[in-house]
Image (cartoon, rainbow, N blue to C red; front, side, top):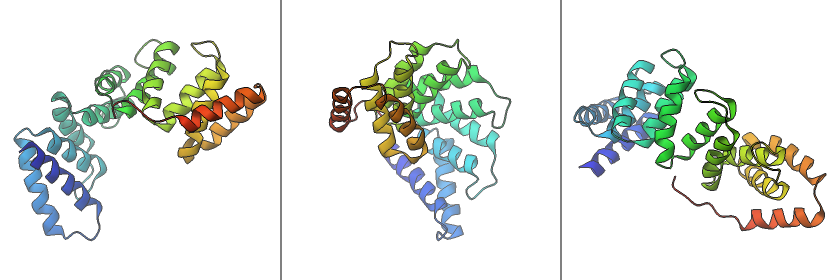
Length: 223
């Protein structure tokens, strides 16, 4: 039954995202998923949260989205925990609450959610909801970076390049920033700036080592 509820919830999400889906089909699917959510199936609760969060087929309603995310999050659904953290972080539907954001990011991060790990690193890096702590920030960035998250790879490389929380490590910094630059346009321009700065400080052998490590790197860890 859990697999069926997940499949139906996912199908609803796909249907709502497709402009070609007939309105009566969407309504029927919504009603089925809503019934499953009312029965306590976390995947259905999470997907209903997404529907209300994005206003797909319904009026956008952050309060309703948060209510469904919370139901799923309290059952340990990591993506719902992450989304709840985002809403507290951004103050969507309620006043901003960084401490609550950290609380939910941490729960999702401990389950291996890469986005939550990165955001938790940001909270430690900026001192939002927790005391500023570069060591903690780097630890969470590293976990997310090892899963292949480009933003975390860039953040980790930047900290290593600047020696924030650790002694500067140009070779490892170059490796992480290079990986970020190759997979995400959002960070590539900033990553290239860091690479140019590092190359002015590194020997040819160090650059070659960093490039080899980047080429050999493979993602690992829970997603």
